[in-house]
Amino acid sequence: MKYFLGVDAGGSKTCAMIADEQGKVMGAGKSGNGNHQLNREQAADSLHQAVSEAITASGLTRDQLDYSWFGLAGADREADFRILRPIISSLGLPRTDISCDTWNALRSGTEKNYGLVLICGSGVNCSGKNPAGAAYQCGGFGYRFGDFGGGYDLSMEVFRSVLRADDGREMETVLSKRLTQLLGYTTVSELREDYLDHFRDLPPQIAELLFQAAEEGDPVATGLLVKQGDELGLAAASAIRRLAMEEDVFDIVLAGSLLTKGDRSGIIRRAIERRVKLAAPNGTLRILTREPVVGSVILAMESSGMHVNQEVLDHLSEGKEGQLSWRKH
Image (cartoon, rainbow, N blue to C red; front, side, top):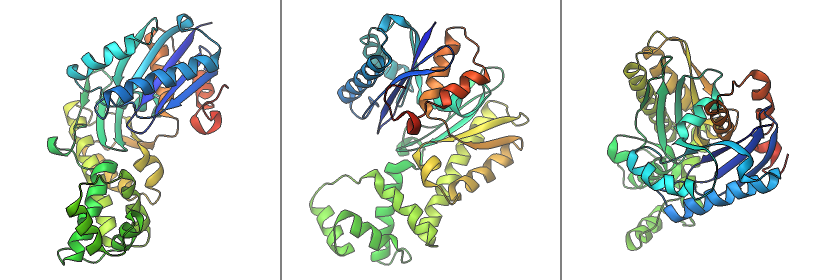
């Protein structure tokens, strides 16, 4: 029997899963931030913790793992891989590979080995692979480099909108009351003065206020969510054109907490779809329902030369986070 390790690491959590060649989940582990761009030492510790927990839970040894795939947020350029390779090498695993976390999210969300993936969690990213195997990444490097959105950017947009509404440059919004309550202030003026006096980071959870306010019909919140979807759709359309996929039939996998959990009313999704359909009428949006770490296990299996059939996929899906609770299966 062969065994495979998959890891999915982002800015908020790192998940590891071990499965056998039949797709039975043997064990799993979970830890915190796994993005080296946010904190290199913390990411290394998180990867070690999650992998060690998964191995302990499985009852296996490292040498018994046939192949391990690491889908890591921030694994974008060679400069990143020079940092990540020694970290992964220090885990003492026989055969490993590293990719950006977009690729395991894509593989988890579609039955095909090609397509597009849009991630909108703490940050945003877009990657695609065409049927011939050519790949392209559009964005993923932050606001300065052309991106818009994700939890960090949207939190800033909420903050700005509330201050602009208070001084009359923006229409009134229920976000004002929700933001001051969340951050522990009684008025927007009090909030402004305190933030002017002290440098404080804005928690990305502020972005969640947008969905609550939009459900109440708040135009400011709705406008920001529409802009988020439009920007993601622009990235998808760019990738589609670069990969010459305009006439192809493929899936566009929507991943990241703001798309899979936050966008219950579908405001972001509909804006994405408007852009995508103009670029590729045969592209189909699919919300990621499997945990992205499942895609890492699939990629590990395929890298070892194994064909992953539907039965294996079904078994792996049974081991997603909610059912497994990241304990031994």
